Length: 223
Image (spheres, rainbow, N blue to C red):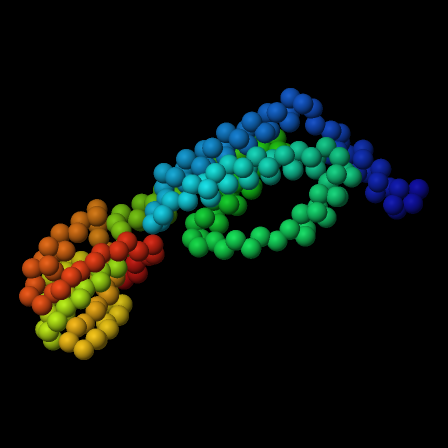
């Protein structure tokens, strides 16, 4: 027996490509759909960005189901598996991921689809529990406030110092200051706990302040 015949016989007789029954395929796809919906609700619940993308959240569900379908197809036939690997190797995704947490949800959806298609249901549940606990402990609990960009237009040399003093003990950082003849534009990064923006009334009462704008900023505060 040649080496090639030995490899072919070992693969075909290993039981890895015995085929998938209709019941197993339905259970795997149903599990992927349920877990994809679960990932969708987790993403919507713990999203802390500025604009929630519903299309991206729905993509997580579809990606979970499609990945499970691909895994089921690969596990059913060696010829399909080789062709699938060749087809997927030429796929390139050009969509930019703005938030690194979105990338985490993408990998969660893909790996959940793979494990669902491989009928490793215990691993699917354990990974889901670990992911939710990790998101709550290491990410969501730290987002106990919101970051804003405060843009203030004012006149006078001492008005800017009065604006900064009005922030008190609120964490802030001056991002920029632009001078336009007798007017000045100052942008300040402000971290507000519990969406408390009481300082806006103090800034409005300062003599020399023309207007002030508070813009939510999708980022993290360090300091």
